[in-house]
Image (cartoon, rainbow, N blue to C red; front, side, top):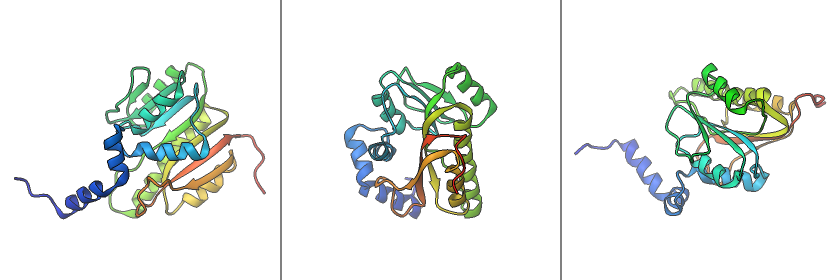
Length: 212
């Protein structure tokens, strides 16, 4: 029998106690992440029928499943290097967001259409060096924002996972130059001990006058 490490035991104990893990298991959701997007959507009204949505960091499919149930005729593109549980109508791209091959495939699927919503649950592979991990998380935030500049409709919206730390406040301040409303929030489904937060930006207006 393989002996588990103390950190593995702590993780298992936390999973058993986590109300959102239990709720996902009991309700048939793919992961607890489902409830993070649900809570963001309930607060900011992000997901509507017929939207064109790009989901970055989609595996294992918690957000994907939530979106499929609510888009009702919209377009969903889900990206991740890992397997994504999805329905037949979702366009799944296997790869890393920001790679040229992935961008080319997004262009092919959109075929000149624009996005209404960009979502990202991407997170860096944790090295344990906080400065390195934070820098990488900000690079992922930039990839999400670049997707907006490339493919988003005027007045579109974005919601991404970020991590509290160096560079985030300045990045959010700059975000206000291209979105009319920007919020930083922490859904109840996010673990309280985590540095994880979500940045929600509404009403994409890349040509708006800078704030004073």
